[in-house]
Image (tube, rainbow, N blue to C red; front, side, top):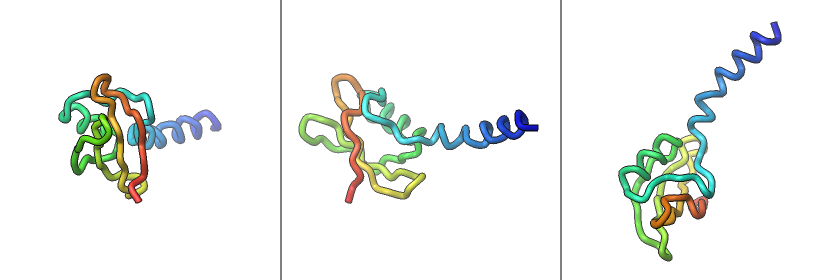
Length: 87
C-alpha cells in the first residue's frame, strides 16, 4: 500500500518538476528562438529580450507564481548568469 501511494505521489509531482524555473548555470541557448523555447518549457513565457550590461535579458512571467522575472543570459555560453524578480 505504501509503495502504491509513493508511486502516485511521484507521478503527480512530475509535471511540477518540468515547470521549474531555470537556475544560474542552466544552458538556455544563445539565440532568441532557443532561449525562448527553453524558458517557455520551464514555465516562464518570454515577453521580450533586451541587451543589458553585456548580457541578454529575457523578461518573462513565472507561471507558477505569476511573478515577472528577469533572466540574464551570457551571450557567449547561453547559460543563465542571473535571475531577478522584477519589482
